[in-house]
Length: 163
Image 1 (cartoon, rainbow, N blue to C red):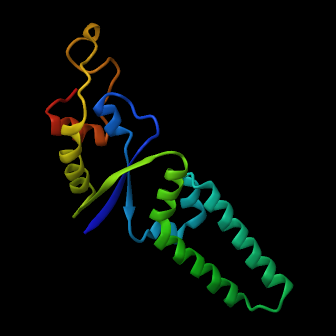
Image 2 (image 1 turned 135 degrees about the vertical axis):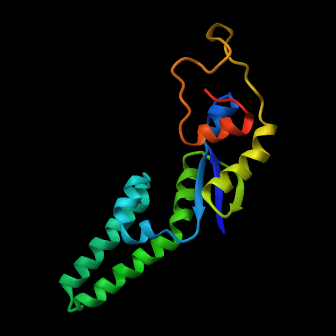
Image 3 (image 1 turned 30 degrees about the vertical axis):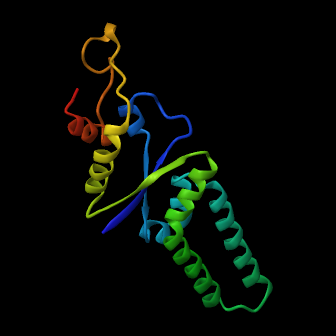
């Protein structure tokens, strides 16, 4: 069973479809990618303060190895422990950074897969969101140049519109 927390940006769009596409789902649980590729994972998720902390810890362990008679294996074991801790706390770090940036947590959702979690969340969340009518000059469909990608396609299927 997977669990995700759902976060909304500080200034969400007015239209419920655009607003839904701006939402971020953060997985709760162990992250293998964060544990195995810690600096890369931190950089890809734009977690700059945790990345700085990771670099400082790695540099401190390297200096401790050079300055004392620590065996390389102990320093390697310490870095393994840091990466393991990062794997367990990856979701917490993402939520912390989103909170610092002004994002608001809307709730959490559980399911067997990512698609099921998204479907469950949007089935409960979409009906409570206001519908913004399409611009009269652009016709009955979506604005020109609009494409449904990823999550937007699933939202469009839920509310019965596709472009």
